[in-house]
Image (cartoon, rainbow, N blue to C red):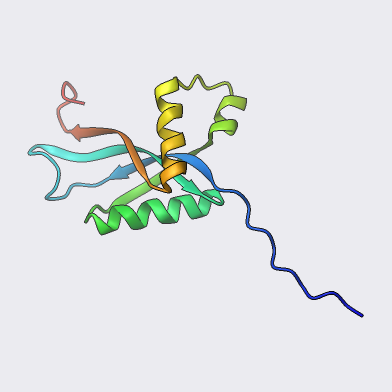
Length: 115
């Protein structure tokens, strides 16, 4: 007698730190040529966190050009990153609310003094 196949257990969600680069659009301030967003996004894996974050941004009519992942909290700590408590609190909130959290935004301009 064979046992029925059990569905594979889903890995627990973790929060990934993502840096998203945006190109020029109507939603940026006058003079801005692009922007960078630091996000905390939950996901069962890195690819899922990136997909979900990009989907949320597209719903807000924001078009990401590039996404760089810096890993999970544990990966960042293992790499020697110093992560202030307020950032860790935002990561915990992203996980608890299953939400993408924008932690920081930076506008880019052609004027080096404004970046």
